[in-house]
Image (cartoon, rainbow, N blue to C red; front, side, top):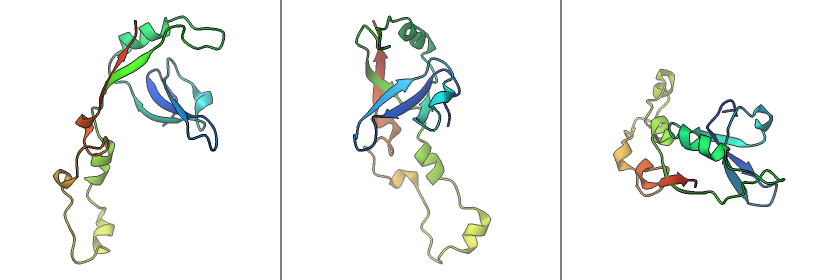
Length: 127
């Protein structure tokens, strides 16, 4: 994924050995960030709120002059379940062991964000 459009969700690492990161939403295409920061999703709604965020004044360091907090989000699809539920390719079937357990997404332990997309919910608030 690349920083190719408005509304991309991305994470910036604070540097080697820092174990720190910042998350951001792009206001426009930012290809200069490709291969530096990780895009992990995109907005599927709330573009009106994104526009309000764009209009918040920033200081000389390009930081918002008002505090902005994400207090609620909704994950609409769980990509891990989609990939895990895919059947193996035909050539892979021939190489499988005789005893094959059928994957059932309902058998997954729920509670983690990657096993239950409804387990995490946040909202973006801007005054």
